[in-house]
Picture 1 (cartoon, rainbow, N blue to C red):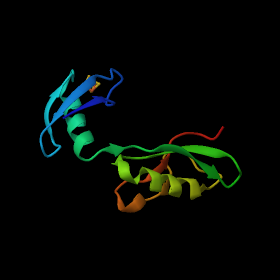
Picture 2 (picture 1 turned 180 degrees about the vertical axis):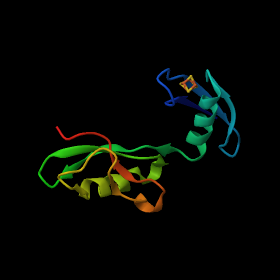
Picture 3 (picture 1 turned 60 degrees about the vertical axis):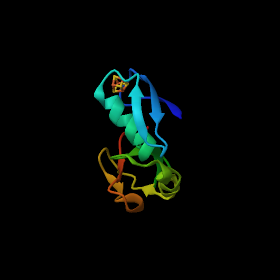
Picture 4 (picture 1 turned 90 degrees about the horizontal axis):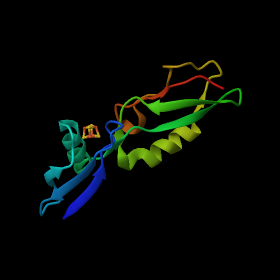
Length: 117
Ligand code: SF4
C-alpha cells in the first residue's frame, strides 16, 4: 500500500510517496529532497502531530492570535480547539504570555503569538 503526502516541514513542499509494509508502517520513502522529509513521513504515518493556530477572545472583547508552543497529537486537535474557544485572555495579554499550560496532558502550552488589532 502507498500513501501520498506533502511534506510541510519547509515551504518547498516536496511530494512524498510512502510505501507501507503489511503492518502499515513506512518501509520506503521517495520524493524527499532532504532527510527531514523522511522524518516527517515516518511521523505522519505512525504518530501524526500538529501545531494548533487560532485566536482567543480577550476580556475587552477583542481577539488575540495564539498557538500551541509545540505540536500535539493530531487526534487531540479538536479537543484542544474546544479549550481554546473557551479561553478568555486578559485585556493586557502580550506576545509570549501562556494562557493554558500542558493542554490535554501534553507538554504543549497555548501562547499568545501576536498583538491585538
Ligand atoms: S523534504 Fe526537505 S526540502 Fe522537501 S519539503 Fe520536506 S523539509 Fe523541505
